[in-house]
Figure (cartoon, rainbow, N blue to C red):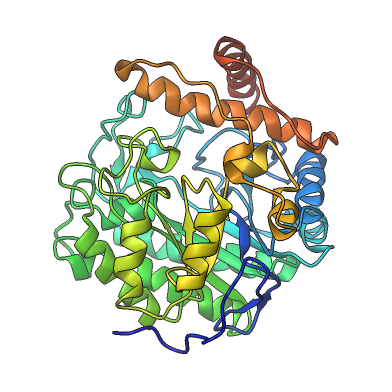
Length: 414
């Protein structure tokens, strides 16, 4: 299917974009979701998190997508995730929303459930589509419990309720996280999902829960709020979600009325989203460009491309060609909060920002993936404290500081 309603004018980073729901992004630069781990022990957003989004809100991005917000306090992606399952923290969530959107950025909350890769609470058994351990080191220590149909119905209600509360607090909408090996991604995966009921087996059954969640969220927040989805182009894992099936999922999401699809890839076993594992067929830059080109040939749905974008030349080219509609940057925002304003002024390059330390050994892939997260998390706290550009510590200091922090949080939260 050819693209629909494509504008004949040349699109640049400064061009506004009106999504199908009617919300207009003032430009084409998005801060993609990153793990902030800046919630309070109660699950409320902290003042540090609010200050961080205030800095990003002043940084010029047309769209800000938050890091993971949990739909259930019984399952965390990381310690100190924000949790939104009822109204107890609604005032603090509202402060967070105002901080990020005060300068005109559209602020969207990423909502998620980790499924079988939950890190906590440690005393709880993880859940998943099937009772199968993930193969990622550390996450394979606990065998998950297979979700019952009643459990699935409860999860659907939780996604919808969290979305409803987010919009009530002032967010412009939500992004349903269905990538990176989290719960909805697990249901899509033939490796993680070996159910024999209506949620497993065929591709249509494995995508059923994601489509139900999208429909539930839309009903909860109405036609005028943003419903976005983050989807793997592929799992980059033997037997996992493959590109051909992912393209079918994307087209089903378009039919479901999704306003913006963010393209990513990988999971805990094969972390392609961090650049540690890359698509060997990618062209020039951007980890998932080829998939975006394949999808654009079949779909007119607004697309956001994130991962490995390095140059202004590339950004200008893919926007002008109409390959994608929004450019997502993650790690550059973790070292230079005003990079969107720089790009809009023609003065910035994503590749010009400092990068995380990396151990140059093939066997160090899991450690390097963790280094990426820990290094950027340390930088987020410095941005929240007012720094305009940060470079972060080296590998040894990053790991030492992260280990101390994780241990302290584990003792206090779990």
